[in-house]
Image 1 (cartoon, one colour):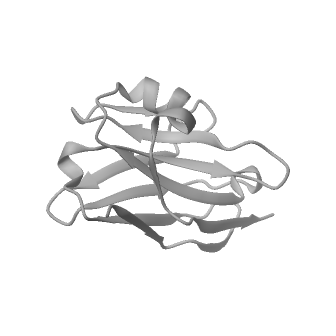
Image 2: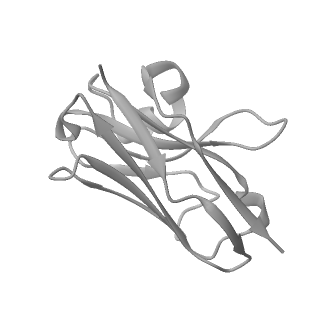
Length: 128
């Protein structure tokens, strides 16, 4: 049974930083494409950053240059380092994973349909 557990969310002021993590169990993260998605109230879930099976990455335009996705395969953990946070980054952040081979761009843009395993989410709130 593959399980994803996010951690590290919280509240921060504009311009601050947070790092959220997603631990995967029941699977080997090195074999999985993984990604971060977020959903703000009354908005659709959107891809934020992804890392493909081959380690390549992709980012939503709104977070490029501010967020960095990384994966520690020894710890089976996915990370998202978020810098220069803005109020519009406020959302529930979800981790997703799947062994299906996909490009980072596909994971980011089609992940809502491609990923079969999802975490419960961690809340990130950025105040102005």
